[in-house]
Length: 173
Image (tube, rainbow, N blue to C red; front, side, top):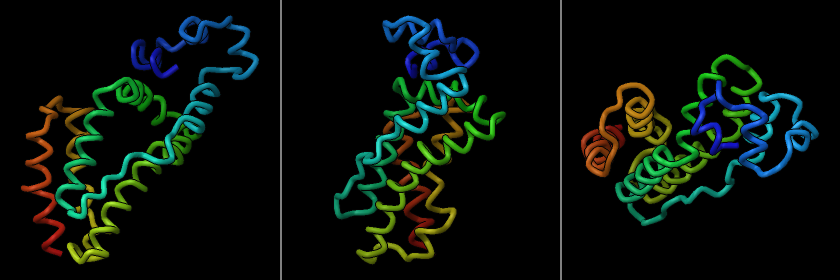
C-alpha cells in the first residue's frame, strides 16, 4: 500500500491498485477495509516501528548527526514518498491526522526525546534546552526543504544544521 501511495499519490491510491500490488483480489482488500480512508488508518495504526534506530554514541553532536541522517534516508525512501502523498489527506481528515500523530510522529518524537534526554543526563545540555524549540530546528529545516522548498538534503546540510544551528542554540540555554 505504501508503495502505491508513494508512486501514485493519494488521489491515485485505489483499492484496485492496492490489490494488484499485494497480489490479491480486490474483494480481499474490501473484506478488511471498506474505504481508502480505513485502509490508510489501518496502515498508520499498524505500520509504525516502535523501535526506530536511536543512536547512542555518547555525544550529542554525533547522535544528532546520526538521527538527522536517518531522517534524510527515510525521506528519500519509499516511506518518505508515501508520507509526502499522505500529508494532504492528513490535513483534511481529523481521523487520519490523529492516526499520524499517534503513529509516525509519536515514534519520531520518542527517538528525539531519547537522544536529548541522554544528553541532559550526560550534562551536555540543560533540560530546558532539550524541551525548547531549539531542539526542533534540525528536523524542521529538513522537513521544510523536503516538503516545500526543494532545497538540498544531504550530509552537508545535516552537518551545517547540527554545527551551525542546533548545537549553538541548545548549548546557549
